[in-house]
Image (tube, rainbow, N blue to C red; front, side, top):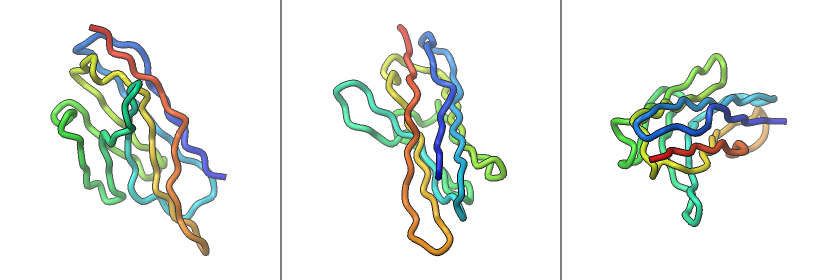
Length: 120
């Protein structure tokens, strides 16, 4: 049973920093791309940043230069370092992992989400 568990959210003042972590566990063959998404109240879920198994990264324009995604393949963990936070970064942040299994089709898994609130 694959589990995707986020941690590190919280309340921070504008200009501050937070670091999110997402650990994947369970029986699987390989983790491909991993990513962070966010969903603010009344808005659709959007991609914040993603990273391939080889380390190639992609960022939403709104976070470029402020957020950094990284991963530790040995720990099956992806991180999101968020600096210079703005009130508009307030959202529930979700981790996504694209997972392969031996002998059957792979699929995408989501975490339960972690709240990030940035006060002005």
